[in-house]
Image (cartoon, rainbow, N blue to C red; front, side, top):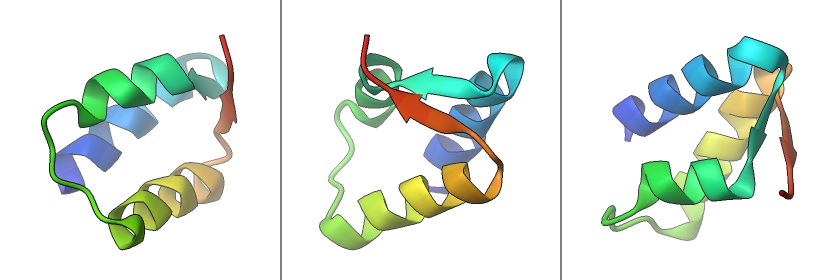
Length: 54
């Protein structure tokens, strides 16, 4: 889980955003529950990274 958050923030820091497709690729194969998804979204929000569609 921390690796997914770290990579998502790393990607989002490049231009202040990350797409849903990029997030889906990062989470592919991971067994995430709703709490994990909340952690990811909160970490991105705290880092000032927007999540947007493609």
